[in-house]
Length: 119
Image 1 (cartoon, one colour):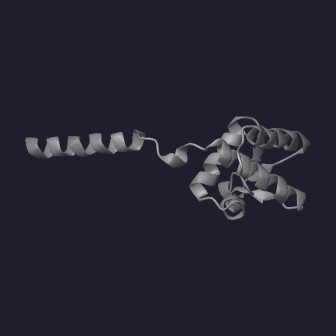
Image 2 (cartoon, one colour; image 1 turned 180 degrees about the vertical axis):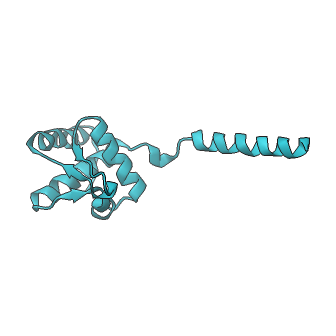
Image 3 (spheres, helix red, strand yellow; image 1 turned 90 degrees about the horizontal axis):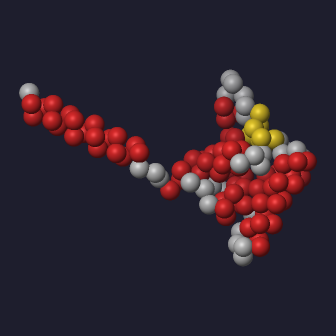
């Protein structure tokens, strides 16, 4: 009985340690944010509304990475998201005139640092 409990405790500790370890997709680089900004600007200029479901398709990123990047853009106040309670993936990314100027600033900042990202 003690062996079983010890084995169970080891498995639980291992799982908890694994969950706490950050994965590379939990963090977005500035290059990813710049690339997403360019994609959002282009998509808006073409007259399309961008939903969270479309992000990975239009940005050529994996879905977890695209959602991480968009969350960081939202948390930093660069863009806004109109959340859809019924279907979270149908939430709309809002790129208004203010957001457009903030996205342009992100792109300009990336270019002044020497970043070369093609969208």
